[in-house]
Length: 224
Image (cartoon, rainbow, N blue to C red; front, side):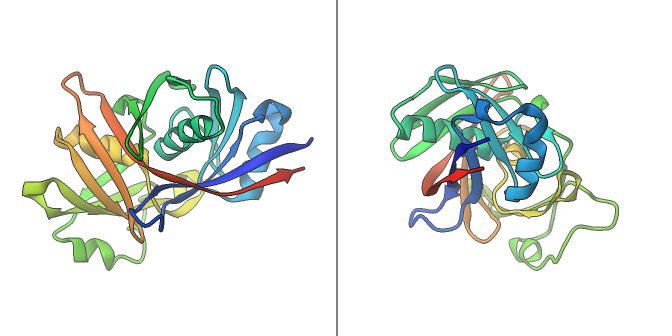
């Protein structure tokens, strides 16, 4: 088994800092489905994407613990990478469904449904400082997304995500949770998560959510 691993950071800030690391195999079909959970666990990223057909955007997403039908930063990152290497697509075909994608300026966007998201507990706290002061989730919360308004009038929030249920102690930037909180609040948001990652969302009247962010490529290397 030999494949090429691309390592991205998704939802970086305006200075290309922070962001959530992501592994993407554009030649994912070179890795057998039975081997993919082990590869994802070995790499240790919060998610790793295996692109089975770059022409159609058909892809699968794995955490170190299990496969996910949809996840936000893998969708944004994979769509960005396909365009960056000269194979742009208008949609990704994921287990959850068809995910439209497009670019606006330096942001890559996808459109998702909140019902695609794995269970996440959304917990509003009293202040952004309270979110920042946390050292972990409460007992018995394996998928916990604490958040607070930074400026409610401007639609800006501060958040973190503790995701032991999928094998992640703390996720730096979580597109799936951004989709859920946007659907819950029914408004567009600008989200500051983790150490300084930036996520943009737009709520649509049919309940879908547009999710956007900046992406950078850190490394390309052979694997296997």
